[in-house]
Length: 390
Ligand code: SOE
Image (tube, rainbow, N blue to C red; front, side):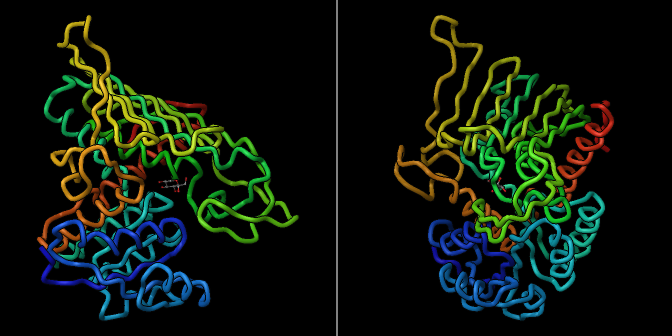
């Protein structure tokens, strides 16, 4: 059923995240029955020629060279933030104060203080019906949404172990250029904030429990790199000048959850051969589940009450119409990809906006992740001292 109302979207940033969010805004209302359909009103970036080219390529009606124009424009009702973390707080707070709904890429901010200010702005705006959400897209992988349902329905019993890793390899080459993702002033943190934040959120989402404390180590393997002269997504070119890497290359930590579970986490962009291995294993008193994003249409489930002779992990192919989000897509077995998780995210956010409900993960959820990131950094700086998450 076509949505009877529309909402103008203004998006800041047009690189990797901007491209995948654009795809979601173009598609969402053609597959999901959302109460409001998005209109791709304006794309903002600093460089006029590049922003105009990106807007034309990705289907935006106008290009702006200052994100403030998105906040000022009457035809924009929703601001989508796909810029590096150092700009999230300023854009989100200005947009919320101007009454625009806000979707913000992860991690919510670069510091706990910024995230707190964003939560305060979100709460002020919520009083007049303005919605905000942080874009932890892996919650919208159907297999992980199914995993959450299985845990919530008690199929795993009491959760005892969580094993979460996020392995990528795009920095393995020590001549790989120094881009904004390796600059603490822009990105806030390295692998920890960029991909560690995803497994922190996903593990809390699947288990329904919060992390209460951590003991961590971090490492920077390559401390100087050739400075990037241009970059697009995760690819970049460099000149001859070198600069300092000011973030972690890898972060590992132990954690405890509110429900008594213990956990290990590992985030790195140096795991040669692992492209986007975001993996989660949960072991409970009645069974276990295991997920690997590189096979994102599968969830592995082991149940203790099946006789050992026929037990073990079995593969659930998460492509049935009855699985989360799948009813909108293809016949069983035809599978989804990375971009669909963003379309699901857009569908959930538009539904919340159109029905006046609170979307998740909220900015408050984003702040909780930010506090875990901070605790990990504090612990690593103090010889892995046990550090409670406030
Ligand atoms: C780079 O590590 C990156 O693009 C992350 O920033 C995204 O959040 C993740 O989904 C894919 O990898």
